[in-house]
Image (cartoon, rainbow, N blue to C red; front, top):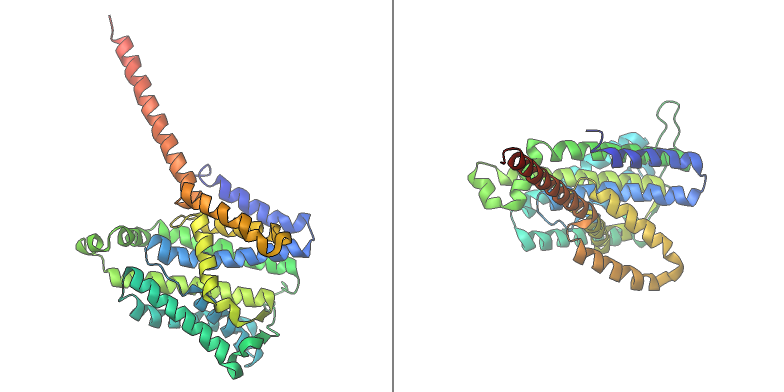
Length: 332
C-alpha cells in the first residue's frame, strides 16, 4: 500500500516544504496557479477521461465559478465563504441544466454542443458589460476570509489553502474512480451499449459525472479569482478549455495522477520558456507532438503500462524458473 503511493507522498512532502525553503513570491504564485488549474483538469478528467464524454465547456464553468464569487463579494457585499459556497452551488445547478440537454447527444455531437455552450458563456461575460464589467473585467475580489486565527492575506497562506483543496480533490477522485461508481464510468467509456445491456442507467451516471466535473471546474474558478483578485472574460475563452485538455492529455487521460503531472509540467515548462516570448511554441509544439506520438496515454498512462509489462515479465520469468527447477528435480 505504502509502496504503491510512495511517489504521491513524496510529491506531497515536497509541496509542503517548498514555502519553508523559499520566499520567492513569483515561484509560489506560479505553483499556486498550477494547483488551481490542476483541480479544474481533474473535473475534466472525470467526465472525459473516465466517462468518455469529451466536454469542451469547462472553461465556461470555470469562469462562472470565478465570476459568481467575484460578483457576490464585490457587488453584493456578501461574506467570502458564503459567496464561495453559493458560487459552487450556482455553477453546479447550471452544469446540471446544461448536462440534461448535452448528454442527450453523443460523441462528436456532445463535444460540439459543449463547445457552443462554452462560447455562449464567453459572449455573455464579454457583452454583459453592466453586470460582469465586460472587457474591463472585475477587480477588487477579496482574499479568502480568515478561518479562526488563520489568515489568507499572504502568498504562503494562499498556497497552502489551494494545496489543501488539491489534496482533497485527489482523495475524492481516488475514492470515486476506485469505487463501483468509477468502474461504471469506465464501463460507459469502453462501450455504452454494453453497459446498458448489463443494467447500467448510462444517462444518470453520465449526468452525475458531468455535474461533478462542473463542480470541480467551479472550485478551480473560485480559487483562481481568490488568488489573482482580478478576472476578465478571457478566462472563459475556448482556448482555455483546450489548454486544460492539453494538460490532461500530457499527464494521461483516465489516470488518477495525470492531471497533476500534466498541469505542473506544462505550466512550469511554459514559464521556463517565457524568455523566448512567442517563439517558445516552436520548442513547445514539437515536444508536445512527440509526447503524444510516443506516449498516447500520457506520461502517467505510459508509466503504468511500463510497470504492468514489467510485472508480467517477472511473473513469466518466475513461472519459467519454477518449471525448469521442477523438471531438473524430477529428471533422471
